[in-house]
Image (cartoon, rainbow, N blue to C red):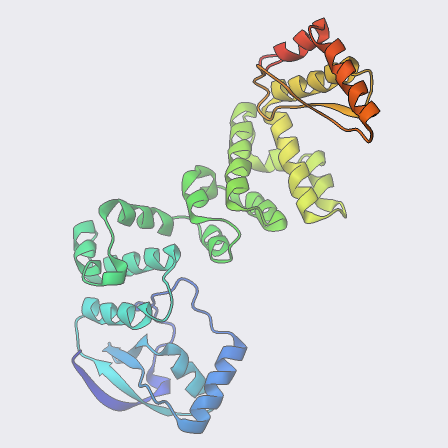
Length: 328
């Protein structure tokens, strides 16, 4: 890196210029800044920040937190390295400086690709690949670059939710409703229930399909009394999550819900309300067989249950149970 080492007046640094930023979420907590400020107050800035000079102002390339900490304790001038490389090469320095400090998230990588496009004044994926493939920990392919471009294009509220761990990048890229006002309501539910990746996909699929079938928006689906009542109830979050998903399944798959209800009624009729014998309900309701469980305390109880099961064998009601499927 070609650079000059000089003392820089902190008032001449444009802290709002983010052209060399490499992290989507780069806010500094008060506690982090406080610890660093104490260190700088004690021994000074040991590792000089790197700056670029453009249009009469200095721009931070790396060490922005050190500069902020120095400003916090009242320092006016800090010894810095002024990078004399091209904007793209300067940004490569910023990327490399941070790459061994933390793992770049997908949002970080999307920001890096966007900034490279801006700094090169070139939207060529091949040009970006050539630069990134020179940085071992950031080697990518064309399809992944396209994914990052798409990720950068989603609304900031959704990107913030990804950064906060509320929604996964893959879910955000799978559905087109994030671009609409519906996304605010959807994010609210995901935030309230802290839904994991697999359930996020099911939740979003159900919402998407219901809104398409009914010709209604996501807001209208989730604003119905059944969901607002669940939200406002005092039950545990995990139970709320379970109830919401259950209600969505009922709306989306009424034929399956009907099959489950008929199964439960038929099974109860077969065992004559004997709760010690249970016909286990298949999850997908595509029945060709059923499983049975029964409980007993003594050998006599065991024999009694077996005799009852033998009586059931060949029963017409059992045939009805086996015929129940999702087309009911």
